[in-house]
Length: 392
Ligand code: NAD
Ligand code: MG
Image (tube, rainbow, N blue to C red):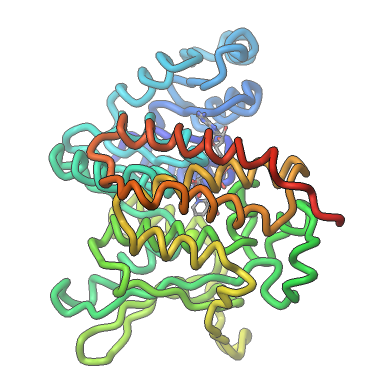
């Protein structure tokens, strides 16, 4: 049976891997719409590659380029907010949400339509507005399938038992490029060093989040919303080989783990096929040749962003929204060479502290979440000016 699919963030790392999965199974999927950010040429190429019906670019300025690239292709196109809305409104049984950052929240939320399935890569949607997003998904009967490798592995592991018997869920982290570096060396790290992920090839924002371990913190918050587990039921384990992605610990002490080679096509295929298996012609995991798998605790002294995210999850309310917004501003400033590596944490921590006394409730709507997000961004931007770039 052919399923219709729309891809948000089609030109990114996850979008490209999704295209590979879809093209390996042309008979299983028909692509309705593809959405991209700024790169009209890349979006047009992707639309043609996938034989999509509609291509929408977020950046209005790119419309004429997009139209020129798609001339005579028969593929319709548009740009700006209205085009994004048209893309998510068009009939599609599955929407794969892979825009990076909080920019993905509005379009992903707009994609919640009765009877649909969302294959969710954009974790920031849940960190910023998890309670509102999941409540709307439930109300509309939309299933949210995790694409994030750890959560997808957990989703598979949960199938081995019943929810009432889950003691805790553990997600693994590679430890990022600085796993073995001293605090002093990390303090002087350049954006290029932070972006050099040892295992995964990803977009630039998530790369930096992996270096600070904020990515793992965001994933704890993501897991909380996806699986309805409390902060004390969620843990992180550093596992540099990136073979075990998630583990569920049951009330009898047994664990069920999800293993796979680190290739996002594996969880993408699983999320697209809705827990059924889509045969994939990928290398098979050869544990004998890997020999050993190692695990260690995360060092929250060298990676304080993980501790900050844990604290935000524990504090609840609007704290994850604030943390996520401050992090995006700080990461962009770090990538732009404006602040040093640990300034990311300093800014996040300072903004979270400044909101703490207000004890804001978890945003009940996406609009409310975005208003808090905006306020936290302004607070973070104000702090950028106060920080002096440490000598590199
Ligand atoms: P990326 O930077 O490679 O791609 C982002 C995509 O979003 C691009 O297509 C870009 O054009 C589009 N985009 C950016 N801003 C936009 C906007 N305002 N409106 C519409 N489109 C916009 O990022 P990525 O690595 O593919 O990550 C995407 C999401 O998936 C992130 O939330 C990330 O945390 C999550 N994720 C990624 C990986 C991975 O391996 N790359 C793994 C797990 C989860
Ligand atoms: Mg992940």
